Length: 131
Image 1 (cartoon, rainbow, N blue to C red):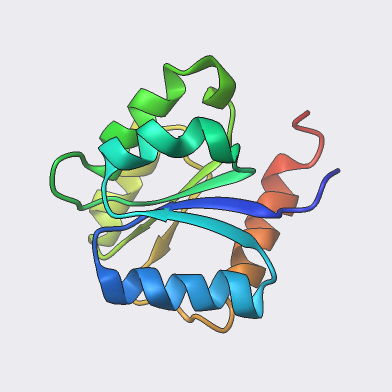
Image 2 (image 1 turned 45 degrees about the vertical axis):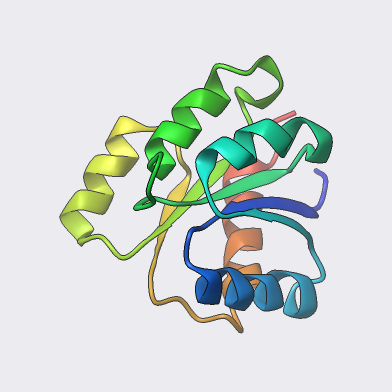
């Protein structure tokens, strides 16, 4: 099993982007590519090749679910694991999980000191042997 090293993060809130950057790069030692919206992420993902995709659900232009649907149409990212971060209700989050192949949903607000460990745990428990 490979380690979780590269995360693509799509989030429209600048403050949450910065907190996530600190949580994953500084605390978690991961490499991170961040985008404010789905179209920019879709244009740039080929050059980054993430191990995991971390998506905000509620964004303008495209929702996280729509971004994931577009990624699943790209052969290189059909099986790249995805996790949502959202402030939606538990019921809405459950529907989101049922409608997508996302591994989990991390509720906002999240703990920046444990986010990298949380993603690593999801990665290890769900992705071991995926390749």
